[in-house]
Image (cartoon, rainbow, N blue to C red):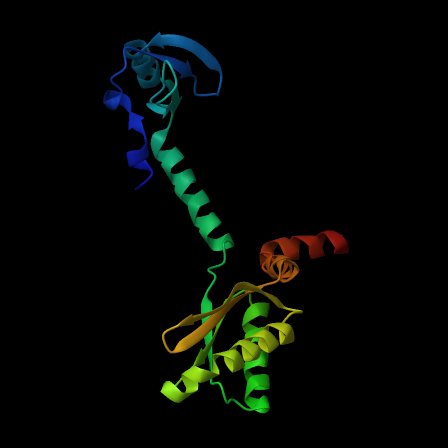
Length: 197
């Protein structure tokens, strides 16, 4: 739902009286909606209902198009800051050899360092391998121990058809480091300029 549809403005406000906040943020008090609309018009601004559930509803005099622009800017910034966490999947088999496990462990660590979630799946290719679920459990336990410095088990080993999977998430201290590294360049430059001056 867009920002504009979240608010009632001007003629859309049907209440007889409202609690009014002026354009500078000052509390005007309870006035009739008609008077509030006139005050907004006199300032070439809009009357916007900001707390519809209050009794009476709270409205503010503001430049609504500027407000919408500021809100969408904030939303864009928030989206930029929140890193999209991806789930990466790595496949193993019950009779995987040690070197292949080590390769997958390294890959999992790379993903975890980037802040991604990792799904480790042991795939049973045929019916005979299904009798080796305890082996798969051991493989997954060992895998979790091997990446313990970088990730923790989010969801333990679970059998689903011919697959057994577990989910790993980055450790909290690693996620903090990722956020620090993502500090905007402009801030870094500003800090460097301040040091030089």
